[in-house]
Image (cartoon, rainbow, N blue to C red; front, side, top):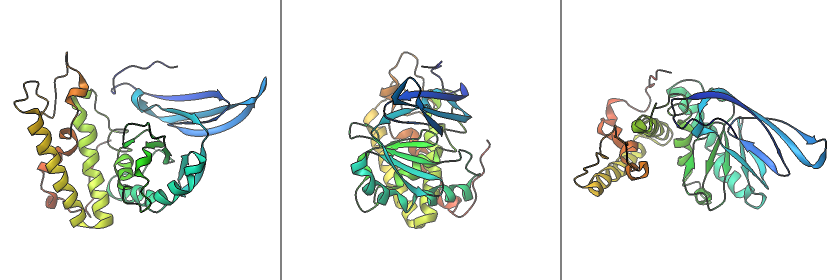
Length: 262
């Protein structure tokens, strides 16, 4: 499909022209679509990503997809029968997540922030593909109790997608700062006690991960890991996500602006 260097240090802009009988979405700016001249049942979909990204952030989705607005710069995509429930779940908070992050860091540079709710086989809570966050349908609880996952994925629009770790041995630079910003967003929206309780849960997850590795001869409890000759999946845990809990939350109240070097 494309040159796909397997390192996050390699970034590039891209454009796509995809022909399909079903609707196509990509992790870029959705462009125009025109009928395929030689086959009326097919449509050509055009999209582009003007901001350089590493290959792991490029995604392509196609299927029986319906859409609905969930904010001034956000569209919700999912299967038609699920559209109404998903729209209700995400329409209240999505724009607030983004605008709150803009107050804390820098303006949002990706133009649009859309959400694609995937089938139940999707094995992750969410993935921060630029312009098109993909999430699990298990977030749809009917009471908006799980939507803070979007605060995390939206935070990646700054930490991870703009400022990216050069290698996966520095994965903590991606996820640690994202959790930090996520907590600042939810803390500003819901109050300091909410952010502090989230930190308590994160601390427990950190302790459980360290206890799970035990003596840790492979060094997986370190922030900077050595993955040479090792399965990166074995190194995956809560540690790179919540290590910034070692900082005192009160040292930077949720109302203060965070400085990022882009």
